[in-house]
Length: 372
Image 1 (cartoon, rainbow, N blue to C red):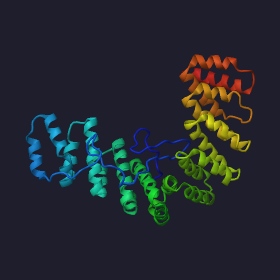
Image 2: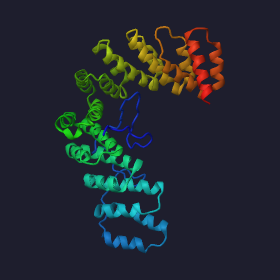
Image 3: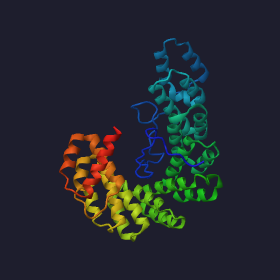
Image 4: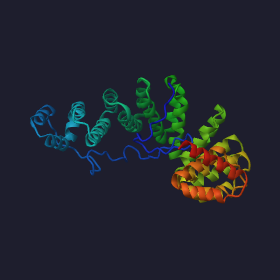
């Protein structure tokens, strides 16, 4: 089964995707990440030992639902230490609410710290959909930093599903952030990962780029050339760019000659320029090779810029003579401008001089109006 795209809005990890990018921003090691047990309390301290059976009887005897839940929270740490499955089963049986779900996640995180395999197994058996997706990603990341090989073997042995596949991608990202050689070697040596291997290799290289970007992009470039997959290299470089856009963009221009790899990478970097600094992106375009490379980057810059500031993106796009903007970029520009300020778009469009650009905006505006 091919890896499914992670569900938008359901991620427990920071994900900022552009044009197929796989950008996961969290870099803390497991030792650096505080274990949250209750909102507002950043670190878990040792809890008094409790007898799980006696405590459960005390809970059942409390007839007030709110008081019962508060009692469970006060002793949650000790209860999860003694009987994590029993504590989770009790929480799962409570009336659904955001607070209950939050506490379940905290209990599962505590359980995973002591027994990642047990926590992942409980989640797979008792949760579904977005909640399962979020929990498995979190457990997979933490487990990868404890024992990446063990975690990978367990997840690959589970039935294929979008939730499992999303967790494995997060696992390889986290594992390769700390141990890139081990993560990539595992992929080479394990045929069980064959169907997912391209996605997992991309995730591993992305994670590596967060800890040693130049080594990661060099390895990714070699692999991309071998497998004729320039998009993989572009994705790895873009992960570096999320941390240091200037250094990554200059590395691209000085290390990689014009060609397919550089064009793909320039397109990805332009998306990040659009998010971080469109003005710097405009200046950077002047360093690109004219033709396909600059056209691709300029189109990506305009399309991304139009999401945050369509009037300014439109103003710049109208002045372009060095690049040919794609039909998709111009359609995105018109769409976003119309959504933000329909009257402003019509006034701006009417002021454009006759020519190809005005014709494209006229056509895009007409199509948008027809879809309303």
